[in-house]
Length: 345
Ligand SMILES: [Zn+2]
Ligand SMILES: [Zn+2]
Image (cartoon, rainbow, N blue to C red; front, side, top):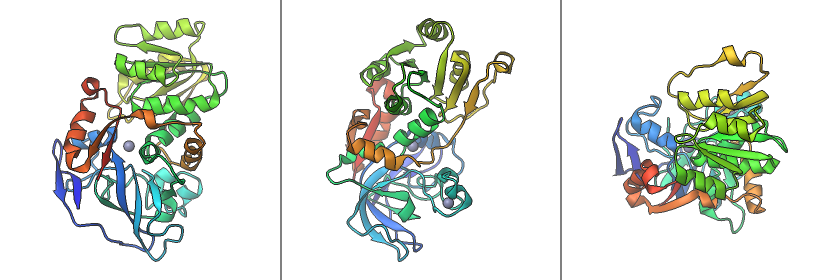
């Protein structure tokens, strides 16, 4: 089968690899119908993720059809159409029993990291019973690829951890796919203001289409002064960090209102300053989280009921034999205006 393989920092290749086989009783082999590329894959290609070694098939998102199941797999049958969660979970360890699937002792984020991933014709899914979701009849498969990772990430790490409530004021720093996924799912709670902050005017325009009440280009405008002007001088109740660099985390600290919450979603590769000299008396909360995908079932029902539409996040489509072009397009998002790219074997 064809697969996109990480070949060490800066190198990747589309290769012929053997079709995966069942290794344990809980496994399923899934034939991929749609997958995508994540910002995390670009981090791996830069060499930022040492757990992912050369030779690994990348990808942790996708939908497909169950091809075969292990003897211990009871919830799925060959032929079932399924959503693959970016987090694999045994459902039995101490972390799983607390709903913290991201830290599962024999799972967590392993796909396209410590085991072969979804950017291929087939993938082996461990703990299939508790890591796959049946697709509703007639579902838009492309849209549901957004539920493997970015929608649960925006919702759990941004909206839930950020304690967004009706009437709240919200700022989201970063209008990439994760920031936009946070914006989409924040609307479940009817915040009074959602302010999107980014350097890219195209992404801010998309954010307005997705329901942002205000947008700020922090490259040409003073983001702190603008947010203060929009919030009566107090700042926002919730600020979501959806970039992952020190400057944006510091900006969040300047935007949060007394009693507010900073919810970090970004993947940080280096240390960032914490301004306790300003924040010590302001009753704020700072949260961090790796997505657990505990909300995936709810998000599937919301998409099915049309109260959530992730399809507009998709900007480009490629076949698997052109996945190198897909990486190029996704990697040059500022020029190509790419958000999420769909790759179909
Ligand atoms: Zn991802
Ligand atoms: Zn577990």
